[in-house]
Length: 305
Image (cartoon, rainbow, N blue to C red; front, side):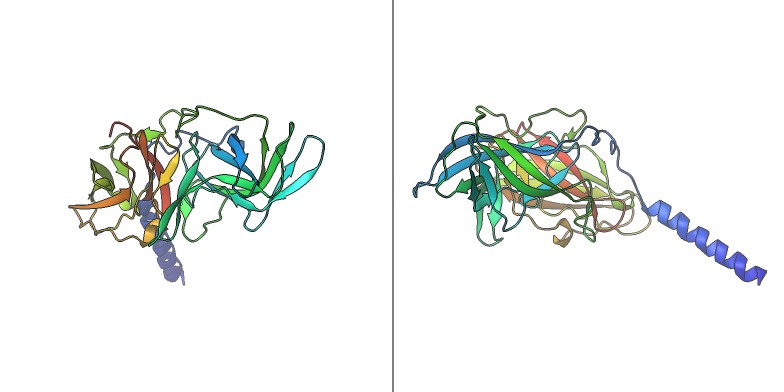
């Protein structure tokens, strides 16, 4: 009996040691935190009328959670416009979202790639209110939810928060600078930075090229371990000085990547469609880390491209 107990203890210890070797924390993981986080906020950039005479409100959304975060307005739930005299109107057209992507803390955006993978389109962020007027003192309320931190394929809604955006329509912002509205120390990385991924594999962006339709990224993984390994990064999107996320969202684990042999390297490319005149770009990179299908986000600064 004692021999059996000893054998069980040995097996448990061995498993724990393997598990510890499997989990690899990237550098600079704690370089920013969610202390003093406010959730998401929104500012009005333009107020006008549709061709049908309805109130149209263009918005920019800001990630003030203190962490990487994705957000979206509550599905099939209208926004509420409250005028200065207390009257309320419902706003049935609501396009407020990050398009599935996690956006870096301190970043702001005004649009994203929507539609389908085969038929993509740029969706700007706005609300429309049928038959309403933006009288002085009007405020807009939009129910939404957001998630923060790492993306876990098995628990995509982990850390979900339900909240309400409250927007003052009297305050219309002009000359906003995208995508960064608040500098966060050590948030972004330059191309060539070595990123520690799953199983201690090192991921590096080795090159960026402009193409006729957008950008071509060259990736390399180096595996110092004794076993082959995959490092999934999906098709990383970008956001630039126009405040729009380019790149259709799909979970990063379903995009094929080459296997990195033990003690060797692997190379591959990804592409994203971006207008030629869009500059000031950052890659919103999700890297499989710690364990399978768990992703940590990085902002890669390619503003000089």
